[in-house]
Image 1 (cartoon, rainbow, N blue to C red):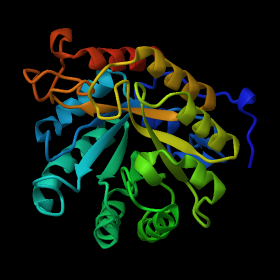
Image 2 (image 1 turned 180 degrees about the horizontal axis):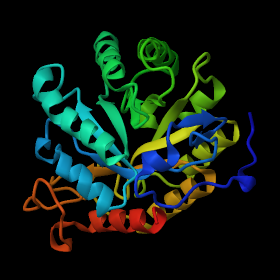
Image 3 (image 1 turned 45 degrees about the vertical axis):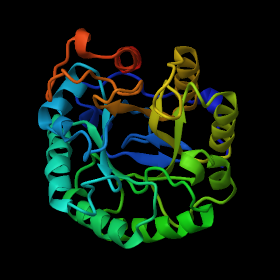
Length: 313
């Protein structure tokens, strides 16, 4: 279904309590909407991998990101790879995830529960998201991201995976939004546009960009998908190179954000972490809880904070 983008009127005011303002999210055509059916753009940040930066997985960080950074959504990236991941140590993973999810609910902002993997683990994902849906499906705050960044998977295999995992979620949660990744690091949204999932409501598809690497070509591909009626959600992005390091390109970043604002696409920036790389937002001496003064926020972190304060007014 084609939507008339020029007539799109998107709610842009920053909500003191976004969930109180927007309520139960829904997807209409290519657009994320509030409970009244009015277009909404969510804007926020992603925490880094829980198994690499667990110190930032606490309720005070959620409060800081809402109150100081103007986030209306936070993404909790539960690592399914690297050492001490969810599959190896599920108890520790939930000790990180649970305070963040429940703090977001208490703070009335949206929370993305992210299965942060580059490999398919269908049975494990079904079990995890089934439990999350049973526990949190009654809250309109929750968004499920069922596969962070597929790399080698075909779109046909991802559709099969998504059908199984979404089917498990829908046993317990009929309406919260589900985010579905697409092939090649969430770049091949044109494959989704040619053959989207059928039979599910309130499903969106993720595109990830890193502005110093991804420019006009991926922007055009993303816009073409939206014009074909594909609901896109930028669940991870950065102003850096695709490696997460290297140069920061604020001009390309601004082009991406302007496109998102024009098309009504929600966007999330990576990441709240203290790694020695360009897309980590904080220095190692930043406290685990915030609030963070400017002298511990890195160049990219300041850029993201300024963008959030500009657009989530």
